[in-house]
Length: 70
Image (cartoon, rainbow, N blue to C red; front, side):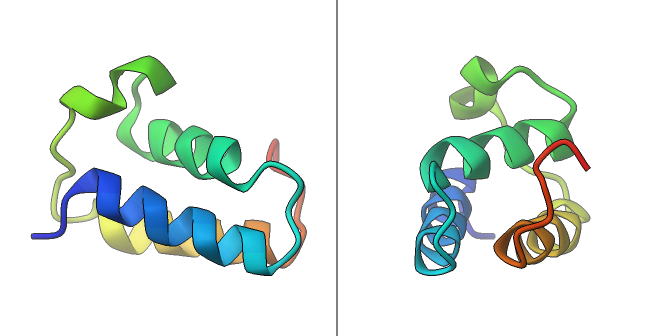
């Protein structure tokens, strides 16, 4: 399984390419949301099997410039 930090790195790159103003922050906030944890605890989390699909969906939505809070 891909480590969470690698998924966040890839998501941040996707968001940067899409022109999102704070790609790393948004990638971390989306990951925290999917994990149901605080952003500061991401280093301690091992994502479950459903995480990748849910996370990729949210990253794709954010890359289309849908506001983070939606």
